[in-house]
Length: 441
Picture 1 (tube, rainbow, N blue to C red):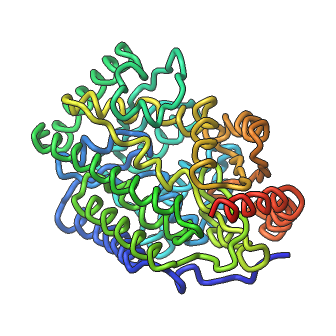
Picture 2 (cartoon, one colour):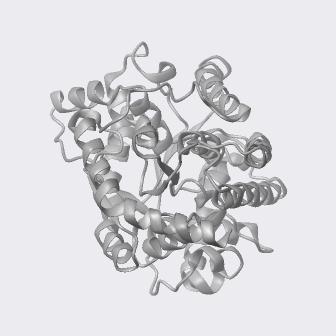
């Protein structure tokens, strides 16, 4: 049993959601004009690269996964991936980074979102795998610009409860030698960026920016706590994504901090007014791993049929749990911010530990795990996490699909699979939870 298609924007609960969407559209549309007409430099960087260095120099940054998600949401992935394969590229390339490459190689501004990305000052990547590195090299060549790479050292130990210790005890958690190495690379990036961009890196501006990002994370954490504590989820996952993900990629801008504070306030007001995504909410689900960007309707597909609501994704509060870093040395804090993002989100035990904590916080009855096809880095920890969750009493159903490539996605089959999972494995436990909560009340 599945839901009819719906307009995800028609029933937005928060006014700030539309504003975030409009701001993003204006920013991308204006970027081409600023670059072409005014000669303004900008940078393309992968999601775990230190955007903050460029932000502190007043240089815009386009995040690779963010733009890839935009392309996918525009229903252009089939066009671009078919084109890429027609050009002789094999189908096993990592999907997240290959989709923007395909858009550049395709080269038609009438097809690309917002006219496509103009030539940047440089590309920036954190080395996490040979395939992604090679795709970034090809993309830099196609854009006729340099690629700056930052190495990624591995931790010797994955100590528990990183989301708590990582905010203040990050020196111990990540290790002094690793942080020393990361700081040296960041200083090298500063030297390169100053020469390439023709701008000075102002450390006072950078320090204020780092403080703003912490404030941004504090507001996101406050919103998360309201979402988790409300009797019924007040704001849907698509709205959460819109209000958190755009500020994440523009975290150096005062707009981002101001917007998440507004989001926090609107979430609080809506929850206090008794707002609910689904009046008949009976079942609470987590969405595990990356987003399903080509079918975001999926997040609301089971509300009418099953009273089942997706209450959380990793984007709901990684901005608060992963990005906040307090301390007296802004550059070292920045090193700590980016040094272990992949381990936190995609490697066990850190991935599973955090998810189980969120399951407790959000009173989750079950979870849907997306195991990405074609993106190994995002798929490393999925099987271990499923096993850990199941052992802890949280039932999980696995969907194997690309985050951005819609060509192999069978939405009807996926909806039927999750519906059966809800009916057979989740509903009994959800009924017991509701009985406990009713008794406690």
